[in-house]
Length: 505
Image (cartoon, rainbow, N blue to C red):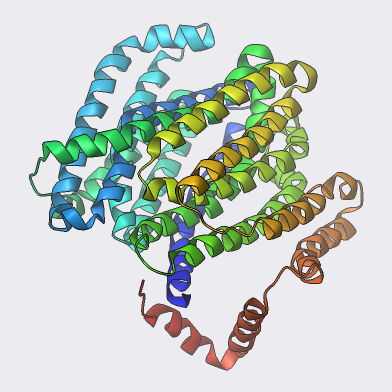
């Protein structure tokens, strides 16, 4: 059992480095996006709406192909056709991306008027559509690297793209004065560079192949997932669209700033763990110890995530004052803990979906996310007029909780896994109390405030210890790790042991 866990940790760390780079780029651009010399607060709100529109487009264009390709890649009945499966998936993805570009780019002007009541954003929308089409292709190539456990190549190629996007974005905005249009032109160029950089790798993994029966099976599996991906993107976008239509762009901007801070947790922790675990979870579906692996995956990933939630929630006040050039955004810190806690249920939902994926019951995933999206719309309609930004954040938290409950219920019926819900509840309650401590601590002077916040973070594992959270075997592992890594003389040897560990499943 230790080797799969060790492999998942190592994979998560490597994917995490790539995802951290994404967030670093995002944070480096926040001072630029909030600088009154280049963008107004309303412009920041427009960027937020365009970004979430891009997520919806990518979800539509991807059509569930990455998930379908990953599911059948390890199917024992098609083990000799893996390159053909990727070739077939890639060919269809390119056709879908071309179709969307053909339909939407000519319609950019009416789309701009429909969303922003002006056609001034039509050029930015054209670039957004093209960037999304390329990103959908990139996502399939990324899925191939994940399923082949090419974590280093994944991180290097995505890091190269991010550096390109960062440099060009700064250049187009500051030197060329292109404004919002420059943001999406940089993304188009970055996505093209990604395709070119991985062209040899992509070609090596392609073999002309078409199997109608297999394509039909993948389509039946992938279509509900496409609808689920779309609904998930809509679920992510509803809050910003609702604030845009029911409140002011100023509130969209403030909420988006809080969302950017909280989304660090999803990108760096949840998505990194998912990238490492999903291929392993599917590969282990026929092994004898898979239930233990799935159970502990939820517990340990949630533990790491909760430490991140507490940290982000407590220090969001200081982070915003550092990265936001305009004081108009500083009030976003009060929303961050609510959004950060919603990510806890996102992670639980992801890890409880393995049973549905193993049983190929993707329809339930699609139905659940549609229910969650409808619920989120209703909650936003009810809560935004009362609490504005706070109403949207609470709607997000409640929706993610219900969404997890739906996935958990139906996944357990399909494929029962004895998850440790008592420990999960203990962890959530403890983390919630510590996360909201910032509401009291932020009135204190800087030095004692920072010390108290650090004590809250450090106190989380010890509070759980007092509550008998840990098993004796887990405590023994922790003690062993402390003994091993506390000996500085053996640091090189310990690092080499990580690199040389046999990775068996």
